Picture 1 (cartoon, one colour):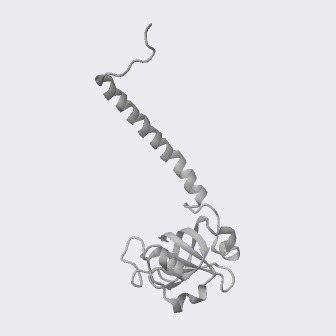
Picture 2 (cartoon, rainbow, N blue to C red):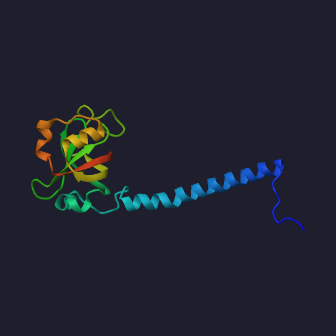
Picture 3 (tube, rainbow, N blue to C red):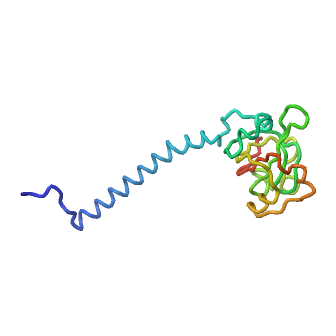
Length: 167
């Protein structure tokens, strides 16, 4: 009786190995091309969520722990990692943003010592969470000025993974 499966010889094993490498590489390309854009869109990374700063400021607990993207106008800069975004609504309708990276204007040396300036339009992506200065300092490995950030304790903050200046 003839065997249904033939064990590969050394010549066939190299061809078989290339076949499997090609198959796995093709599957990865398909995954990257189709799945990653869907996941990024669901996470709001492309900013297509339609959220505004005012939406998040008005109901921050609804967005806490979620990765979202927001576009807004810088109201004030705070040190080398922080700024507030203007909610374009009532006075005081602003959100504190702390960046994981030192802030610099895209494509340049940075403004105001590396910061964005007031009225710059930015696109940010990251996570909304309750602000606890010591937790954020430990997580990001930075020191935040306690006199400046005290007013934000126990409010919500946007911890930005990316900050991009919009021209």
